[in-house]
Image 1 (cartoon, rainbow, N blue to C red):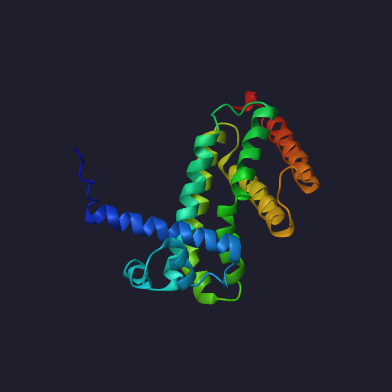
Image 2 (tube, rainbow, N blue to C red):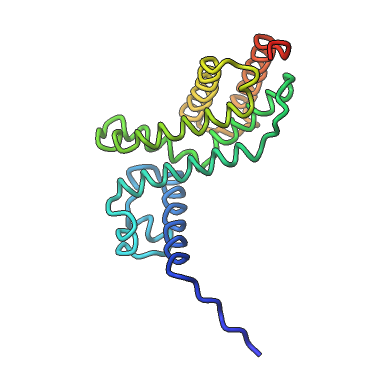
Length: 208
């Protein structure tokens, strides 16, 4: 006796198509760069027609912005689930910074780097990305607050997060090989260790 295949609802099919398009855009941006990430290339990778793409995303820009938002949500969630709440010692803080480094240097996060570089010369893209950038910053601050709100004052929390993320973004832009085992990676590992030591010593547990 055979079982009839379960038919997906229209909402499920819609969500599946959007997910396939977003994942395909992430892959195109990471592997081929902004200029080569055309709607045709995305559709070919996703196995979706261009008509279907434009039903969900009326323009290439709207697809790219939605992809940036998708990556931001996924990266923040990945960071949240990969760390514990114990961040009192240098080793624990360094471990958290190391996991943030993994998120920032991930192939998926290349999406953001490609779009931010392109936005420097494209005012419309820059304006369209602004809400997504502000949302990402708010999500990262919220995640950092869950870890360090008892240790760092709010103003310092934002500043420390900015130092870490900008340093890691700079590495990602400048390093030809972001492999953590490569020599530049070991240098960054030491830099994050020094930052962890400064955080723990500057904001001792007794100050809580």
